[in-house]
Image 1 (cartoon, helix red, strand yellow):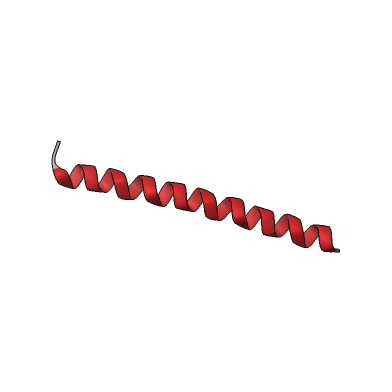
Image 2 (cartoon, helix red, strand yellow):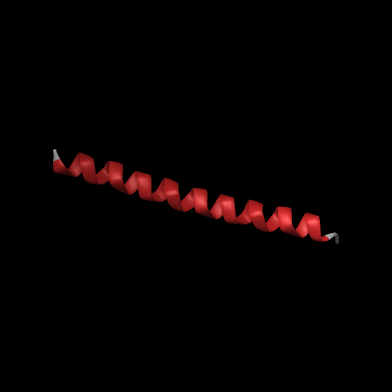
Length: 37
């Protein structure tokens, strides 16, 4: 397996995990705003 392919897979995993965490944080912030009203 070429190093380039491994690097692309690692970057893809980091972005997908990071994006998932950001979405979860955004959902939590939206829920908190709803609770305050």
